[in-house]
Image 1 (cartoon, helix red, strand yellow):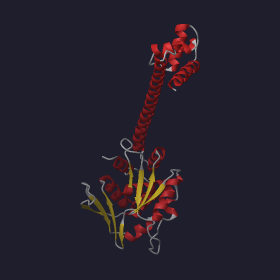
Image 2 (cartoon, helix red, strand yellow; image 1 turned 90 degrees about the vertical axis):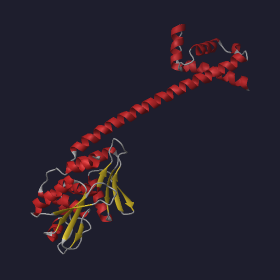
Image 3 (cartoon, helix red, strand yellow; image 1 turned 45 degrees about the vertical axis):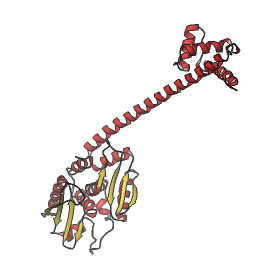
Image 4 (cartoon, rainbow, N blue to C red; image 1 turned 180 degrees about the vertical axis):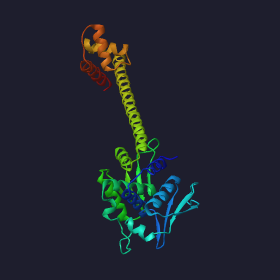
Length: 308
């Protein structure tokens, strides 16, 4: 079962007030329905969404809807469930803010449909049930999208989302518009707004795991980079020592630099910090990493002069 389906099945079990249920139906019908004068036809692939919709329609409007099963033409093995409403069609469409009192189509629902935050949440649940998806955080980049057809509806949904500071964006597609979220914390907040508490727990657990894994990888990469740098530095110093020795130029170095040279040969894999500590312990004369680096610069300068 996909993560999106789990979210939809969870929010389909939420108990709502009458005004919230009407807002949810408005969000679903406006973005899913095929409407004619005497019929409203809704479509879903999910059985729990089907049961949820038929139940709330019966409770709110006291009518029975008809369910038909169709083959899915979108290369999916799942069947499509079509909910057909033929009773109280005009009343329902006006009640959810699809038509005004003169049966004119409303490009966005009237204010009373989403008059309070809980009604906004319900409307967004209805939209998600019919045209929403969230990538599984375990296998993909963080991404939530809502696919709608009408530009006015897309802007309206974006505004509703951004009431909650979700930073929702709109992308124009060939067959409509995509409202989307990319930030992990915003997607988590969005799931909380929908009321999908179990989906939020799963999302946050995976998010924490991924963040920790990424942090560990960064630390490992940083550590490996430091190791590579130490090895490269030591290799360069050993190459410079070889040049000096092959040209019998060691006596051109002062005693402290000769000492650094001998310790580098003795401990070829040590970092400058480690080598400074070793010299301090073995000679009883304190030397810092900076001081040791100064000696190796003298060694490098002499090797360069010999090469020239």
